[in-house]
Length: 201
Image 1 (cartoon, rainbow, N blue to C red):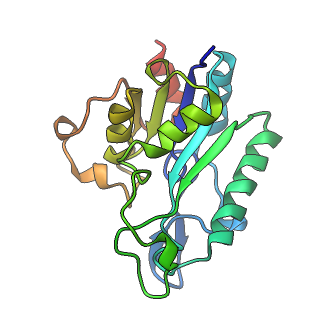
Image 2: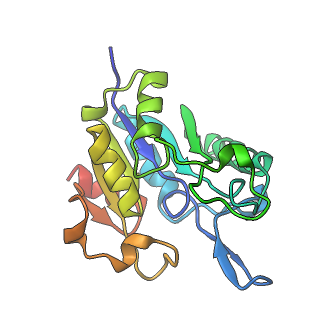
């Protein structure tokens, strides 16, 4: 029987962005040492697991396509995150990653530089997880911090909830967009634990 799941974005949802003082830039974490769980993540994930949801991650990671980092760094960081959550008693059933980017960048992996149907807001990652884990998407929830997550959920036929903390998220495209311009989420909150409470209030 298909199962209900919560499919979570990675950066800005589960872990914080990395602030590189040397480069003067804010980027996605690309090394295990850079992983910082956001406040409320463990509590929120535990509450979702208690309600019987399968937990999975769907993340766009175009760094290798842009020539910024090797693919191995993305895989190593994801594996470390899953192990870190397991250490808190949280089981992640699968991690789906889109490494593509339509334009790429200098030194980018040519195999990853192309349009695709998995890069959010396309629904490919969600459909992949649904097939892999035998999920019922209409009974599932996608949680992320950008409009791309909401659009991917809508296109896959799942519900969506938005993590939105304007004080913290420097990279969130949705920060500058009125909520009226994107699919309406089932709930909005600045932390995962608060978002879960709002979803099931």
